[in-house]
Length: 476
Ligand SMILES: Cc1cc2nc3c(=O)[nH]c(=O)nc-3n(C[C@H](O)[C@H](O)[C@H](O)COP(=O)(O)OP(=O)(O)OC[C@H]3O[C@@H](n4cnc5c(N)ncnc54)[C@H](O)[C@@H]3O)c2cc1C
Image (cartoon, rainbow, N blue to C red):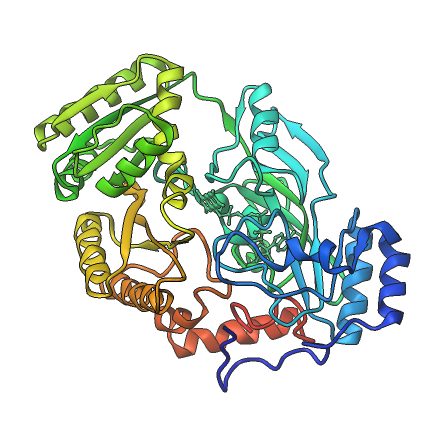
């Protein structure tokens, strides 16, 4: 589905055209012949990402190994008007790496050097293609915490996290990727290499381009190096689980926890359908009859964690939990976190297509939003299960279906359209962490309004005069 309107920026002149022989020769000269992929079999994996139902064939896939190579590719693409879709691991859930207008898919996964981890400055400098888990594990080995924790951490790249401003399971206490990006090396679409921010915690010289580029979804520049802030590793982390008759009760527990002055590291929920899907998948001994499961946890010193978990358990009991269990050790904590981490693969087993969505509402309205999602799903006759980050008001309603079942895809899309309208009406947003990409494009203007959309397009044009980077997405 390609949507544009009269105010969209023009597409680059090479959009939808095959890549000519001269360009292929030039790309091979820049990155080496084996890093330029052109056959159907070789480019097929790059015609899709983790978003079902979206697919488009790239003209060519190019895997550069250095900032200089990225710069040479982009300069040439700008001069020739060839669309370029930057890509990390392709794990995004918003169709953000689908090359809808063909051209070059520029894959950064060969740039995998961890250049520095500084315990003195509490920072790390990594190339674009380092995975989130590699960064976090390398920091942990030095007693340091890289806090952003997306469920895709073993595959997603750090630059992909920055480009999507990825969130994760620790958002309430630790924030999201943007809170940790100190500096970026970025290649502009015209080939110039700039450095935004740097190693400093305090630096207000000029517009905050680091923040603008964080979450820009590969539409403004190609990130080649990231400097991130690290924290001292907390001594202890522990998790508990509470079961409730309904999500409304779980919502009251969340409100109670915040009211008690706690900012826990983990506050995640699963509805009844998710609980059962996860139990079928992972056999963790979850209470299948519960209306909602609330996973709560914290980290810090042994005393502070003990106090915070005891208070949270008491609050859950006071607000009507039908059972509360605390993990005794790290292994039990990990098993509980698995329940949340495997929600998506567990739901994916229920039907051939899994449409996972992402909306956020003000935290106190979470339970109301889940009720409204259930009502919307019933009206459109689709099966929905919802899980998410209760502490952030960030929900992941997930519709599973068999595409052979008549017009179910259209019913699912119509249901999600209503879900996003409902989130906006409740003071929320159409995406809390997964981004806009091509999947959410039809809803972006509803969230931002026409004036802000026009400003986004002017910003896009300033960065990318030829309109080559991820054309048609975000500000295009
Ligand atoms: C099982 C699963 C669990 C997930 N859990 C979470 C979660 O908890 N929280 C969350 O926020 N997301 C989650 N995601 C979504 C996804 O992993 C994130 O959006 C992640 O940040 C994408 O990283 P990537 O390297 O795969 O980027 P890609 O998918 O390759 O690209 C994502 C976007 O970034 C751009 N991009 C990539 N690299 C660059 C670069 N070097 N320079 C400029 N732009 C670039 C692309 O053009 C695209 O717009 C999950 C996905 C899966 C499949």
